[in-house]
Image 1 (cartoon, rainbow, N blue to C red):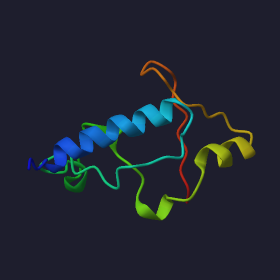
Image 2: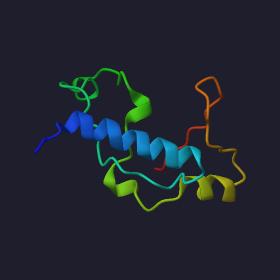
Image 3: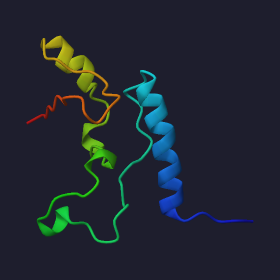
Length: 92
């Protein structure tokens, strides 16, 4: 029986999540946390080298940011290309 390391599993799950997201299932999140770097730059005051792969913390799950932003009249769309302009929102 072959065992997969966490990096391979997370890479595979990220591919599934991305496919679902780009097909309109924006509220799906498979990866609980990234753990993709051997040493977290953010915890040491740096910048994440792979911000497109990080996920919200558990306390934010259950909040539909797309529906919330749209309900407030704010622009928000699923981006399918890295060159598209991002709309970033946060909760306080």
